[in-house]
Amino acid sequence: MSDDRKKLWEPLEEWIKNTEITRFINFVNDKYGINIQGGKELYKWSVEEIPDFWEAMWEFSGIICSKKYYRVIDDLNHFPGAKWFEGSLLNFAENLLKYKDDQLAFDFQGETKVSKTMTYAELNKTVARLAKSLKEAGVKVGDRVVSYIPNLIETPVAMLAGATIGAIWASCGAELQPSAVIDRFGQIEPKVLFTVDGYFYRDKIFDIRDNAKEVVDALPSIEKVVVVSYISDGKCDVSGIPKAVNWEDFISKDENPPLEFEQLPFDHPIYVMFSSGTTGKPKSMVQSAGGVLINHLKELILSTDVKRSDVLNYITAPSWMMV
Image (tube, rainbow, N blue to C red; front, side, top):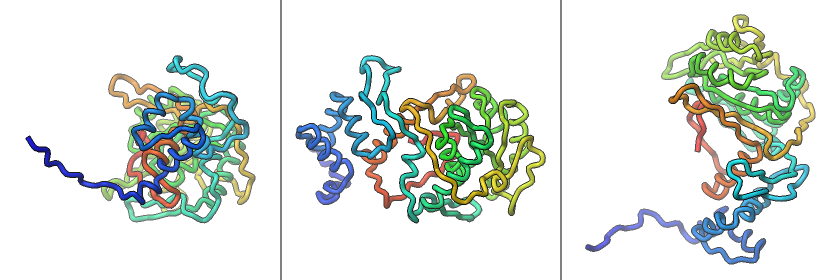
């Protein structure tokens, strides 16, 4: 029986030559004096020489740290629970905010055709202002800052501001009912909640301020609620939500505060994620800042060949992890 299958697509040699994974292979070959040829050999080496692979990924991706690790991993046979990049001190947000120019960082398009953009320069300034406000609100290293909000520009800005000062982030999309949010956030005792007046879906407006009130009433650990106006023109009425203030009134009026990044161990938590809740209440899963950072860099650089000139498009609610 003949095999008449035909290739649908094959990359040009020039394209292969200019990919990030080709650059990484060349980097690895130079660093370790080996001769890896192609992706299959790289994969084989990466699972046979695990410490070397991740050390190369750290260096190749240019991770910013104030103190370098003294070893990559303590015990490969200890899983889960192995200690990675021991001794290193870094900040998750500092690595995401290393660019401070006028290139676009965010290009938001809402269902209502409302669009917003933010450059890296604007992003750095906004994160600095919000981080200052969170500090003044009493947020410290290890405190939980959470959101009950759609994927607006303000959502990652709030996450980055929290990460700047060492807070731990968790999120629920605005479409979740209060009981689902309480089941999740009730496990981690958040100090600050970012929420929204409402959202749009299929040309309908959904006001969630009553839902936000129900969440705040059920979680006594929340000391401050910051409300972003999305369905309202200008500031929305937040009087019905306890401890609430508008985003515009919360964010620091200082236009150029210093952006000071808390330096933390590699395994300091950055996110608390939650399972879907199909087998009882959602289970919380803690993700380390260093682990998320280096793994995302590996996926974006090596697996998807993302370059700084590219655009990533996400159409989802922040209740979910995108892979």
